[in-house]
Amino acid sequence: MYKTLLSTKVITLFPELFPGPLSASVTGRALDNKIWLLEAIDLKKYGKGKHNKVDDKPISGGPGMILMPDVLDTAISNLNSSISDSKRLIICMSPKGIPLTQKIAKDMLQYNEIVIVCGRFEGIDQRVIEKHKMTELSIGDFILTGGELGAMILLDTVVRLLPGTLGNSKSVVSESFSENLLEAPQFTKPLVWKGMKVPEVLRSGNHEKILEWKNKTSERITKENRPDLFIKYV
Image (cartoon, rainbow, N blue to C red):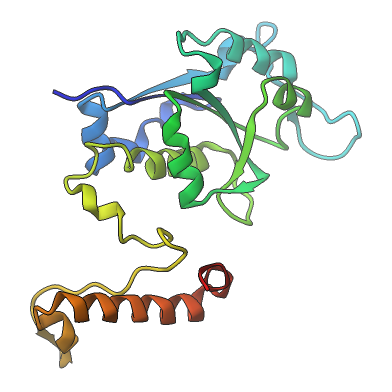
């Protein structure tokens, strides 16, 4: 029997996209076991008029449409939740948000409920972001058509950290980014494949030498592939 550790709510124009890939593998099993809960809320339910209008043109002019603050505010205010504000985090997926990191994901475990607002078009009226003290998060320096894919990536990152989601709780300890280092390469059988051998040290059974090899290899790979992380490490 599992205990529910996290409730998540996603406000989106496309609720049919959820849970999507989150229903598979370990996150899907955790969802089935109610380690975490997911509710996709259709923003169109709170739209205006017979066409359920949710957006309008930017005041400053220019292309695209902006999600209206009163529509989004109504959706947030109507969330069915008994979670106190101190245990609830409201997030807006946005390319101008702070970059998502493993540390940020771990810090989210202190909350009992995470609400994710998925923007579309040219974004969300800044006033509703400020009113609800949303944390703006980005998954990278690129533009998507909406926040739904970013929300799924965020949820996958956080949910797999919940106790009971992964079969082996030690799996998260030596992962990439855990100590500002990228993970060392992994190998399995066969020991020789197409003329390429598994490094001898990994077959030695000497745990101290194996750990030393992994650390040195992680340092080298991080220095080559992510010098920004390596600077933080050193």
